[in-house]
Image: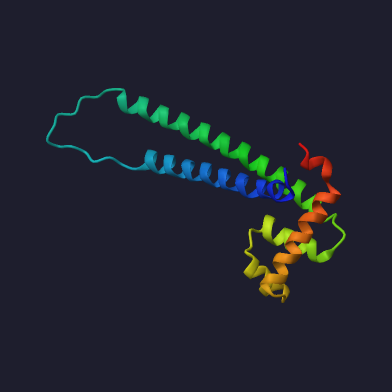
Amino acid sequence: MTAKEYLKQLYILDMRYKSKMEEVIDLRELVTSVGAIRYDKEQVQTSKRNDQLVNAVIKITTAENEAMRRSVELADKRQEIIDRIINLDDGNYIRILCMHYVHYKKFEDISDAMHYSCDWIRHLHGEALKAFESKYPEILKE
């Protein structure tokens, strides 16, 4: 695994977590939406609605538990990556890698924040990845 692949894990985990949270929100909206009442048909009390509600609650609970698991996994990986980045020796490398891989900033935004050209930021990014790889060769072999 390259340094870039290792650092991109955070973005992937974040997208998985956000996707699961959207699923939870959609399921909650589905359960709380009120269906139309049909007055042209005679209503017969059945347990079908209750069964559907129980199934929906089970789906929501399962999705919430999965979202919580993903949230914990994301927080743990975020802290691990931040800890490794901040142990690099160059402040510019730390700033670029944190802004790009932890805060998901584009090179153009990093360029503006650091007052360097975008080309120079790309160059420093490449150097930062090399520094990361030489500092942590053991984690990249996994």
